[in-house]
Image (cartoon, rainbow, N blue to C red; front, side, top):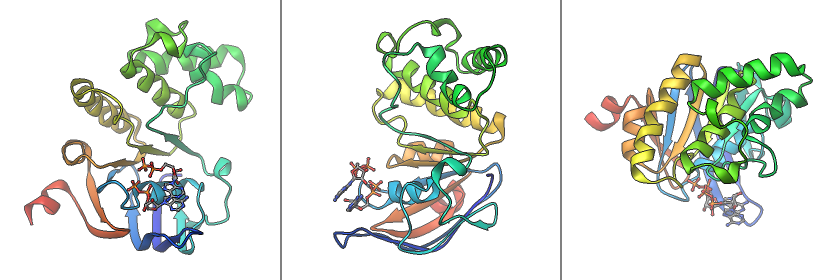
Length: 225
Ligand code: ADP
Ligand code: ADP
């Protein structure tokens, strides 16, 4: 998958919460789109609907131009990184990164080569034998990214991936993430409540408030207005 289109997408949860209110958004091939807004405005819900983890109450989610509302998450060729990383604590870094390839039945030799390539691109080539508990927060984040991109997805979804890290590391990883996704040419939707993050990373920013999309444009367009 390389493009996303949301057409009048609405999400009302069972308890009556209107989390997303008739949103229209196009994400282009290779674009780095940042979904920006305060906590509770519906960003994660939008991301989860793109991933297929939540069903829209109304409207259409199109992936590569095709209606995807009923497509199960595993058939969407999408990778997702969450703020808690969700690494397997009992596995080494190398096995964590290799895990999606193992599930896909890739043989050990090409698997090892891909893991080495991805790990060195992320600057964690020297910690492959460690367990996640023996890593810094930044290294854990890199492992989570490595595991997400190892199958070369066309679409990369990130939900506040830096929010648990300290300030200096956040700035460093911002540059690293946007550099890496551009190098890979992977379309990215990145959720954050941090305006500085949005401004430094985004090709375009989509600003959300209370379930509604307020504005979409390049950082200059959105903040120049
Ligand atoms: P954000 O990612 O911007 O913090 P969310 O998408 O997580 O916002 O949540 C949007 C709104 O929907 C919030 O009011 C939240 O409490 C509510 N919400 C999220 N998930 C559920 C759920 N499973 N059931 C009911 N309400 C939910
Ligand atoms: P976020 O980091 O996006 O703000 P939250 O802390 O709002 O995440 O939500 C974490 C989890 O709890 C999500 O899976 C979300 O769907 C669920 N959730 C959030 N609000 C509610 C709610 N009011 N009722 C039930 N589940 C909720």
